[in-house]
Image 1 (tube, rainbow over the protein chains, first blue to last red):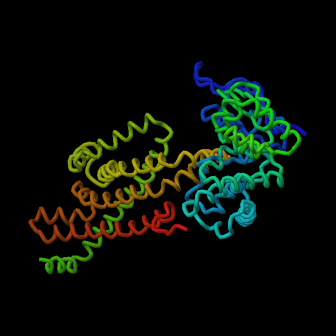
Image 2: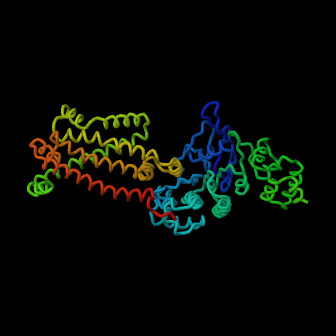
Image 3: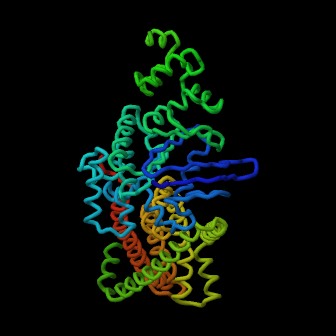
Length: 286
Length: 218
């Protein structure tokens, strides 16, 4: 299979001192779900917005489905890429069904078909049909984010860009939404590029995690790679800052690694352990 | 007094009817010009920050000139009659229309705009499908202010020969006939109040539709 998105030596800076992205190389296969992980201001959102050309880069090449970004008609390209953002950005003057099917309207699909598609999509994101006629202001935070996801899926895009789309909801709803996204991805198989600063979210969603720091990719690999084979001092310090202090304890890591390799412990369980005190981990392991 | 005014309305019915007709026509012409020019200017201003600053300064300045003085100046430029009256009223009415269009368009949430652009909305579609509808409540409140102001100013416009209900006031003053003056003033007030009431109802509808006011939350 070919690549859905290829970044090649992509760099971007506002001033010579203010470098946003430097020499990004990243190839994403068709159908992959890739998480861009990093602290705020690291450049992950900027990288995402290069794909639908909300931002431009200075040097390098960006190819989508093997074709250079500059060879696309920009509006048509954007319509073929799903886009969901943290603030959702639902249109307050349109009903839920109009919001969901907005891209289809831009593509000239008639109202009957748009209604039908919206109705399928609310089902997919686990919302009730009666919400279709509501306005965004009549929805809860979680419902809004689901509508945002449904809207990103409306035109059957082959690529979906998501910028912390589950940021503004409580923990429980977020977990539900993440599981749902994984299901949808399994079912529909689009290429998803997902930006987050939340390491739990990254580990739950992505088989492939790209950790970004100061505009550079510091590691590109699986959750196991990040925990057990960090390629840069920042990787461990980033995870450590997020509450996995046990990561700095070589003895604990050495004890955990074989368990993960043998499949006795999954990454979620491993992370749950890493968040605890050394004594607790030792008793659990014993 | 009130009885004599009523008698005057009955007695001079065709006269008042003619003046009312003229007043409505002047109002309609001015409202049309101001709406088109105000919307256009407001839209262009969102694209040019420098122009926006100039236009807002200029329209605010025009607003501070006493109407009688402005009419006087215009008479010396464009002469007596409807033309000068329309120019003066349009200059006054531009401020609320331009300012509200500009503010309304500027206040559309950046998240909404980013989502719309990111999904492939063209510049025209963005203006037409997203920005204008979302700015409509604010634009409409400017429109309402402008219409009422236009009706009131129409009364003064008659003093430079533009016709309208102000002629009754003028005649009353010049012939020392207070009933006539009050009769003309009352009709202008009535016209303004009724129009304002109608616009108020429409405005409530617009606000409800686009801002969701007075609607229960689920």
